[in-house]
Amino acid sequence: MADDRTRRLEARLAALEARNAELEARNAELEARNAELEARNAALDNEKRHYRWLADSTTDLISRHARDGTFLYASGASRDLLGYAPEALIGVCAYDLFHPADLADLLNKSPRVYHQDGFYQYTYRFRARDGRYVWFETTSRTRRDSGTGELLDILCVSRDVGRRLRAEANRERLARVVESTTDYVLFADDAERLFDSNEAARRRLALPAADGGDGGASLADAYTEASLAELRDIVLPAVARDGSWSGELSMRGRRGTLPVLSVVLAHRGPGAVPGHLSLLNRDIGLRKAAEAQARRHQAQIAHANRLATTGELASNIAHELNQPLATIANYASGALIKLRTAPDAPAADLGLPLERINAQVSGLAERLRHIRSYVRKGQTRSRPMALGEAVTGACRLCAWQFQQAGVALDPALPKDLPRVLADPIALEQVLVNLLLNALEASRGHPGADRVAIAARRSGPREVVMTVSDRGPGVAEADRKRLFTPFHSGRHDGLGMGLAISHSLMEAMGGGLALAPPAESGGARFDATLRAEGTSPRGGAVAAQDIRTKRPGAASRGG
Image (cartoon, rainbow, N blue to C red; front, side, top):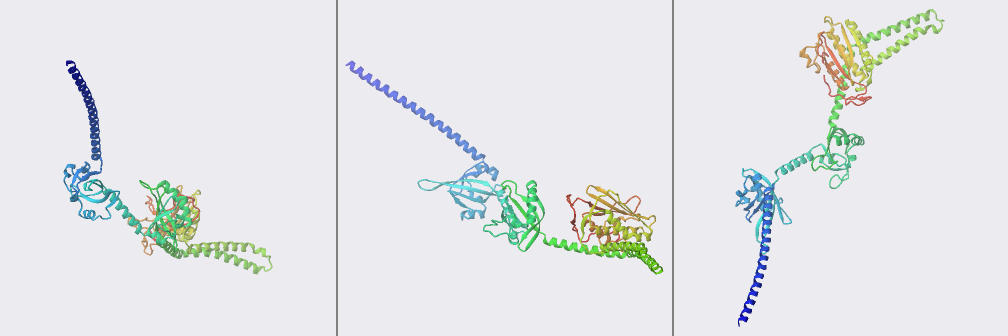
């Protein structure tokens, strides 16, 4: 009996030990499971803190709303964007802070509110704490119950797009200006294709028609052959180097060639496509026509001045013509007398007087050609010439007047002067006007017995010619008006001599100025001319048309 009881106790003890081992194994399993859950919980806490940090660190406002728009959560960006602390927004209805007009658009689902792939995006004005409205662009997504479809909450990401909208508004305004301007605006790529143009260009230029813009049009369709060559050889390399270029070109208009002032700009900066260009072209046809008319008026005024000067020089011209005519008459009379006294003498005996007559006739013809050239009409055209030619011609025209007045005319030019770019007749006209003014200032003035003409090289590309006298000089009050038309220091002067001379010098690419008064008194005028081999921009030049800068321009005495 005792043995049975012992066996039962031992069996029960073994069962209890087995149960205990099982419980210990289960406990170990639960402890491992608990450790795993605690680790996962810690990871989730870390991830939660990380996402909260991301939400609070982003410059966009992240918010969660109830179905009625009430804030359930707001990220830290609310402080910078709206001036509200995140907790201050909790419980506030977002719709109450909408601009009324934008709220109506949202509720009515205007075109500014669109849905794509489960997201709504809209742009609106949202009131900040200080009362101003901030332009927001918000992307929102709704969360619904999977079973019932009931709206649970709305997640929103909002950003301040005020700067972007202002930039877009500026671009839109500029686009409207470009489209409405009368200038011809073209946009080209690096293959010379035109990918856009404004209305004025489409209306006035002979661009080929194409669907969806200019399509197949190119720079060759917009510019003349000569201007296209200049674009390729000069303009495009300059734009690639400097970013811009401006100058005159010619375009192909529907009714003929259009002269334009062009500005070519490279597209640079963020988002710009390399090689893209803007070409702004302003029609200067009317300006060119006005300049041509001004040049014609200038030529007419200069011609009238030469005719008037020729009238003043009539006695000098008559004197110069009388001398060779008297000499011709004397030799002809002597030859006739010799022929009458010795009719049978050989013809060779008359060789000397006939040669002298021929020489005088040739000289007289040359003088008449010079006078005729001086008074003829013609456009001012500059070419390389020796300065001495104009000085000699002007001195010959004025010599008799100077002799009659007892005033010495003293031209003294250096032998090493370079040739200058000038119109011979225009330069001679300027010299005659200056010499006659100097002579008039010298009449009756004590010690005013000499008028000098000098010249010097004032630089590698410039020559200055000076005409000076010993007269009373120019009064201080007259200096500012000296080159003004119709201002004259002479009671019988028209006041046009110096004005025309000033314009002619500018037309030849030079200038005319009154030099500061010298200690010895008198007046001195400096006429600046370009030296041969230079153009106004410093390049080589042989002969060119010189255009006047203004129609009348500027007189000491006239």
